[in-house]
View 1 (spheres, chains in turn brown, blue):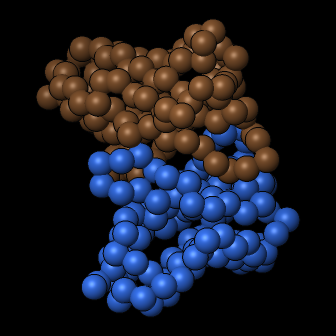
View 2 (cartoon, helix red, strand yellow):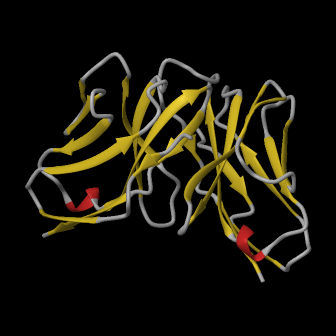
View 3 (cartoon, helix red, strand yellow):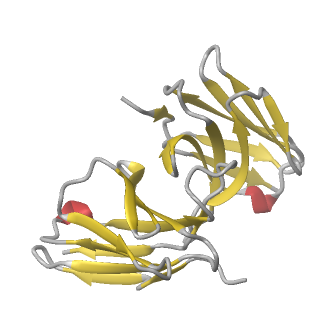
Amino acid sequence: KAGVTQTPRYLIKTRGQQVTLSCSPISGHRSVSWYQQTPGQGLQFLFEYFSETQRNKGNFPGRFSGRQFSNSRSEMNVSTLELGDSALYLCASSLNPGTSSGELFFGEGSRLTVL
Amino acid sequence: GESVGLHLPTLSVQEGDNSIINCAYSNSASDYFIWYKQESGKGPQFIIDIRSNMDKRQGQRVTVLLNKTVKHLSLQIAATQPGDSAVYFCAERAYGNKLVFGAGTILRVKS
């Protein structure tokens, strides 16, 4: 059974550009969450999607957005990139939100560098 | 606000010894507390979780203890192995799949 797949794994952008990251959850998983990981702030929740609807959103500016498709695949977009957006962006999937377990399955992340 | 407080200390243990990693949390409304392991270049990997109405839960070589009185969570790893070397994160879940993570603890296992 394939795990959570994130693309691209690495990318470099310049300030002001935008970026789109993709996440394919584990087959059958319908909930997808996104997290940002930086050395200074650690792992921070961005948003969560279930059945193409955003269920929850973290404390990030509106430049950060996402969506989920009918096949549960998800994308997140960051517009007008800033240097501080350099981070590892992690996607996690689970069967349903708030299941009777704390287990989320994480992908290996997309490492974004903003120059 | 929500926070799971954990600086990023380093715990060095000898192979075969037991390891104990600690974590403080702040949200009494969280329903699950979870431990994740992250190896270099990889995403976090689920280790074990504990529901808020429990005090202790055991897995394979790992035990999680929850003390709600002092809002403290700990992960015990028995017979620590070199493959256990990683960064360990505690996390709490308050709603849906929104997890609030601690800063992490580096575990180094000396052979």
